[in-house]
Length: 73
Image (tube, rainbow, N blue to C red; front, side, top):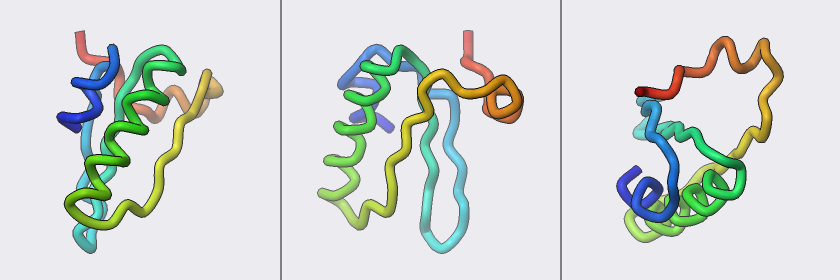
């Protein structure tokens, strides 16, 4: 998460411990910024352990948007 917010103009909106030592980190921002942030976060994660997946949702559908955490003001 630290590498992500330092690498690009994104907002950290949450993290979720999903079990088995896996963590989901969520950020919001412009698509390009989120892509840069996830690239940096992926590189940092690979340095300390195993990276399982990275996924960017550009312009999420309103029904998906409703279940995502809101951006913190």
